[in-house]
Image 1 (tube, rainbow, N blue to C red):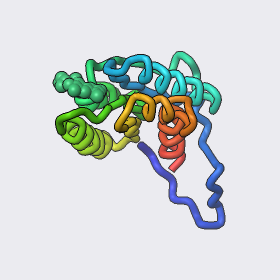
Image 2 (image 1 turned 90 degrees about the vertical axis):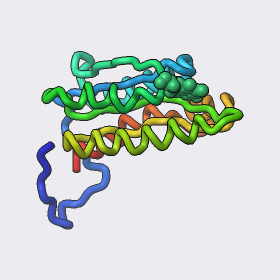
Image 3 (image 1 turned 135 degrees about the vertical axis):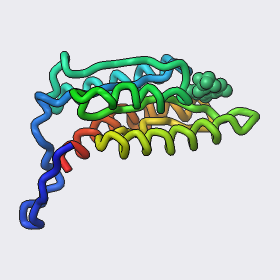
Length: 158
Ligand code: DLZ
């Protein structure tokens, strides 16, 4: 990922680079699939809205959020992929599985981003209930897929 040093006088927080030739990989977990599909659609439409080309957006699915890390690595290792957006929904249950999954994914995808020097976005919705997850997938708290896409573009504009 090439970066340019920007003088403070050039700073403009609204400035996104042209992403027409950037390639994006979405990694989408199948657990809570209806919700993750909605996140993925939000990310996809946002990338298009900001100028990405349909043929430059790739989508791979993984069984659950725990597998997002390896999925991200498998996409990030492709030189032509510029940014990866990981999308999953982890609902708190009776055990601590949610903690283990969320920490593993947060650490895992951080490492993938650092290893390949490209943005790998954490689009994991972690809530207590399904309703709260829907609130973050097009409901009253927005759509984390949209936010993930914007974060990817912002990082490419760094
Ligand atoms: C096993 C499991 C559980 C209990 N809950 C979730 C969840 O809320 N969200 C999610 O994305 N995945 C869940 N998984 C599946 C794990 O992420 C993983 O796919 C399996 O443990 C297999 O490694």
